[in-house]
Length: 114
Length: 117
Image (cartoon, rainbow over all chains, first blue to last red; front, side, top):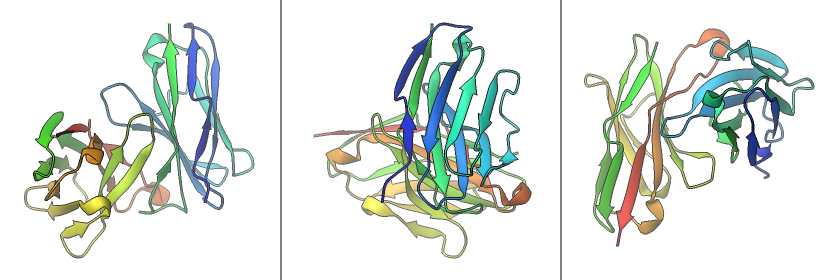
């Protein structure tokens, strides 16, 4: 079974530029999550989708971050414009459905904003 | 709101020695508890989880954890560690009945386990 795929793995941009990350969850998984992991901290949930609908985006900085999952499969997370404090690893995870199902994580995208 | 405190940021241990990684949580509602492991340049992998029932939970790679409701703790243990256990370990909590059934994991800051030969 293929795992959660993410691209790119690494990205370096200058502040005020925009960037997009892509995630392909495990086939058949209805729930998709985006997390931000700043160096030395645990992951923080940014947004959760159930199929193509948003379940929780309470911690997403909506003035600069946006995410979509149009067909209930792949998802993209965008930052526009980026700030220095956005430097982090962005993790995508998926699970079979809502509830206490195991979340499977992708390898992450390491973003450096200079 | 929930919070998680991992009491040790780094734990060095000799190979084949026992280890305990400590985790305390704070929540005003009933919770689920999890331990995840993160190897270098990889995503997180579930080690074990407590949902209900027996307070002693066994996971993969010989790890186990004990849920202690009175002390609001969920410490992770392994009786004999191996070099390959070197990784970052995260404790996480989620509400049992989140909004719309959402499974919002709140993670601790992590404990770096280093196994020395």
